[in-house]
Length: 54
Image 1 (cartoon, rainbow, N blue to C red):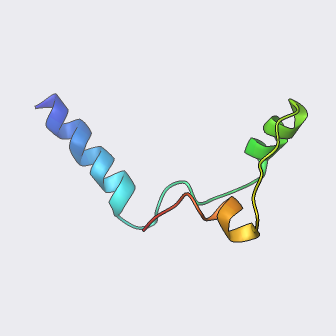
Image 2: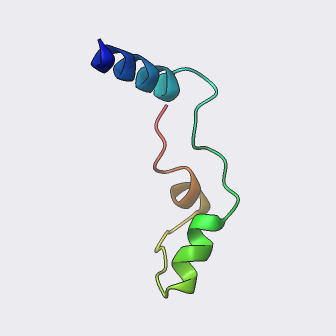
């Protein structure tokens, strides 16, 4: 019963609009860059929208 509840909540969070995770305030890249790591992206779309599939 608990597994079904977790599955239901996960399915709703992932597949029902508004899609969670599309906000970007820049914190991820701020932490990455401050540690000397850089994202090698050829364009804006692949950097900010390339990971998200509707």
